[in-house]
Image 1 (cartoon, helix red, strand yellow):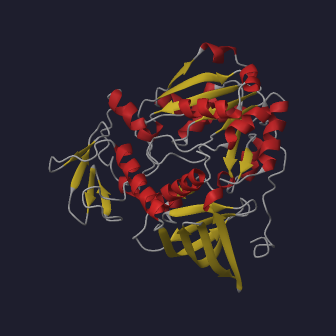
Image 2 (cartoon, one colour; image 1 turned 180 degrees about the horizontal axis):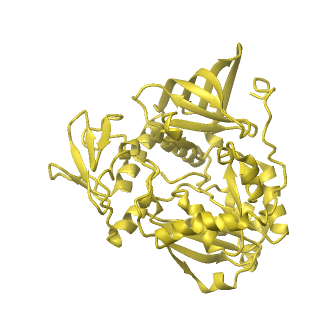
Image 3 (cartoon, helix red, strand yellow; image 1 turned 60 degrees about the horizontal axis):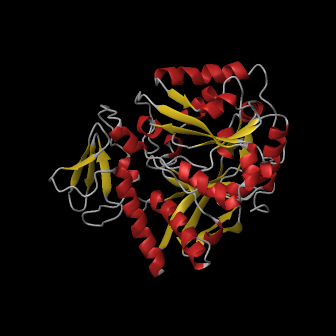
Length: 418
């Protein structure tokens, strides 16, 4: 693709991050604190955090944009260098650079990111890192990269965690908005510098995996957090795309507080406490993440049988830099047992993008992107980001996401690395 888009400027991922400009720091606080106050966010700090000073790494879970605002308030008066995907810079490159952010193309192995993090820490910075690298689809933890432990060992600074609870309930990824839910956050030290030095990479990864376990819908249920918003189920069919009653895919729809299968007619009501109740009294899944994990198992079964396959004509656009999207017309998007394959023609030159399943542990997807592009999958190389929008309604980008993760696990198991 470098040849096809050779005339376009590429974002310089090697550019060293800067400290936040002094005049922008108060603006980040003004931007963040009203959200913290409106949602009555309770940040619970442990004793280690009260003594913690930069440099350190702050690992955060990722459910909504509110995560950044709470993290900014948690580390006050310091200002983190957040690792941000390139689309976060879109049409505001100067601003995002000057608040100290570090750019990353999602799910790529980029050594310049490691160097830039090291540079920021060398001047007593804080790295704000969202290791799941995408918003949670249903308020539960996502897969973490195996390389995270290696990165922490190399950077050799203390590590803290900020786990927010309720952000997905307040603004679910499948139906953005603000439902004025009161939320909480747990801010604690995970590793001291001495522990980072003494623990093995596997021990570090194991501890992070243990701590990064959360479930916003369980949190809502257990804390009896009521959401009376009448359209609380609208968009949920984007995540729950397969009916557990008749097993039909892509026939689910949602309206107001109701989830419906068009194929068999079964209906569920989403209660104010985030649970699903079948209209006919025959509950299958009352817990939304349980339905989602059941869908994962259906995809994993197809992969184990070697039958998984997706292919659609799609529309594609590129984002080599944050200036603008570049429309590239039509393409064929294929996802199969070997990974992603994109084939098309741009300015009379054929191109192909191949991303092997064995090398991609997850993928970023969007629902109704920017309100005009529909559902899409976001594929990245070191130089380019591609937004690919399949045509029609008989597909689910959620399934593409689940399949990417399960294919990676499948090949790991084959190689004896699980």
